[in-house]
Amino acid sequence: MSRPRGSDRRDGIIRAAFDVLAERGYRGTSLAAVAERVGLTQQGLMHYFPTKENLLAAVLETRDQWDLLNFTRSKDPSAIGATELAELVDYNATRPGIVRTYTVLSADSVTEDHPAREYFHDRYARVRQLVAQMLERYADDLPAGLTPAQIAPIAVAVLDGLQLQWLLDPDEVDMPQDFRNFLALLGIKT
Image (tube, one colour):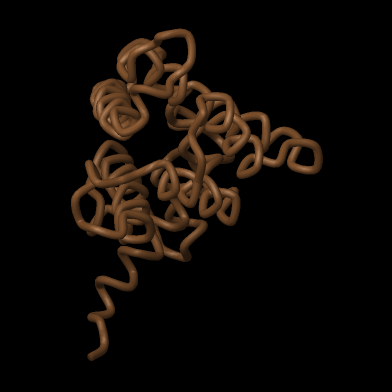
């Protein structure tokens, strides 16, 4: 079954927005720049996304959907184990543009009145909780008597830090292997 043309156009706009946001950050991105990238007028783009905030929300939602669709073997994200998390890092290494967009937007979100601030605040809280749940399986083997809840923010920082280092120096930073090395430090086998 073929998809409607409007759906294809919307997907094209979102993909173009990923690129422009990665290049310019949120504040440097305009609807006109995204429209030009996708071959539309600004008015044509506004038919799909009336505001820059609507487009930003669609970009963030799309990234989360891609991760969920491509990496959770079950539809329940709480079922993710260390192997699935390592596979997600592998997958991210195949899509530098998406990783760059996420990195730029997450860093931008700490600035005053950023429209994605609440999204990233909530997302990091969810991810820390999911990582802590995953680490519960290994609680007896964690180093230094640390709890899964204590290690979860460190693990999330490692994930984001590896992404940033990999984007800056992909020839020197092997993001998938380095993440597996981190899991090994925790005594977790994948």
